[in-house]
Length: 162
Image 1 (cartoon, rainbow, N blue to C red):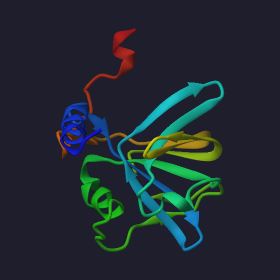
Image 2 (cartoon, rainbow, N blue to C red):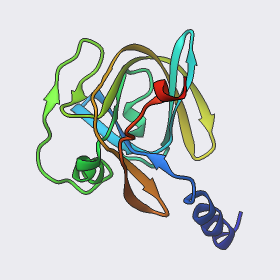
Image 3 (cartoon, rainbow, N blue to C red):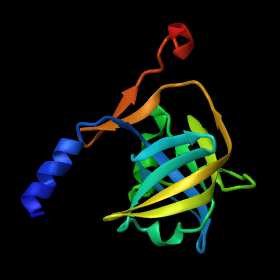
Image 4 (cartoon, rainbow, N blue to C red):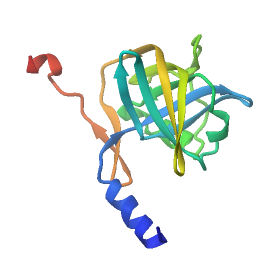
């Protein structure tokens, strides 16, 4: 694909609104992480999630075969997203976990054992088997049109639909 077409495709894809997460793990240089907006649940039985990581990401080569934690960020955590995307902004509050380190204050977190990895072109698709998880109430950090945004916590959840 030529450069102009690739940029046009990227612009088109940016219209899809996503959440923002930081994938954290213990690597050869200690605790590490990277910001992703390509995260999805795959299965409840077994409990599987997928993160797509660009091969050019600075921590990409440290993640294969390692347990990881997906930290879904709250609206107030934009600085954390930017920091793990390559714009360091100070220290982060880490929490120890038997599977993988996680970030304090995340809106939701899923500690995962490595399950499968797949070639995804210029990305690698990492599938994790969820070993533990948790969440809190609050607004979510989102990403659309190449900008951060906020998803307000709804007044009613799925229980309202039943």
